[in-house]
Image (cartoon, rainbow, N blue to C red):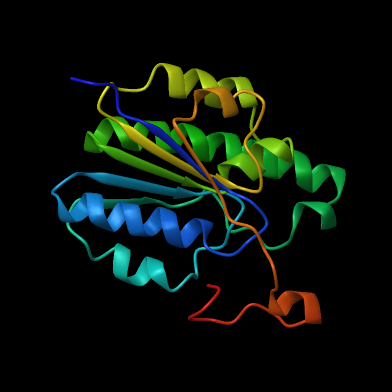
Length: 176
C-alpha cells in the first residue's frame, strides 16, 4: 500500500477550511473514518453542526474556547493558550488512534505553530510517524519550516479582495 499523502491549504485568501472540509466530506462519503481538529478557533462555526451528524466523522473539541486573538493576549494568557493547544494536539493524535482515522484535518495548525503555540518539530514527528494509511490535511497562512518539505500537496489561496479590507466583520453562514 502506498503511503497516504499530506496536504497543505495555505495563504491569505478565503477557502482553506472550506477546501479541507470538502475533502473530509468526500472521504467520509467513501466510508473513511475522519477526524477534524481546529486550532485557534471557536467552536461556533456553522459547518460543525452538519459535520457532527455524519457517520464516521469525529470532531476533537478544543480544551478551552479561544476568546481572543493571540496578539491581544498577555504573556500569561499566551502561556495558558500554548498549554491548551499542546493538549489539544495530544487529544487529536489520540483521536486518530481511537477512531482508526483514514483522514485527519488539522485546521489552522500551521498558524498554531507559527504563533509559537505548538512545536514545529513535534508536528513534523507526528507526520513522519503517522499510520501509513492516514491522509493529513493542514491549513494556515503558510507552511512551516518542518512541514513544507513533508507535504505532497501545497495549495495556496490568494486574497485578491475581501470585505474585511473595508472593515467588515465575518458573517455567520459565509465566513463561519
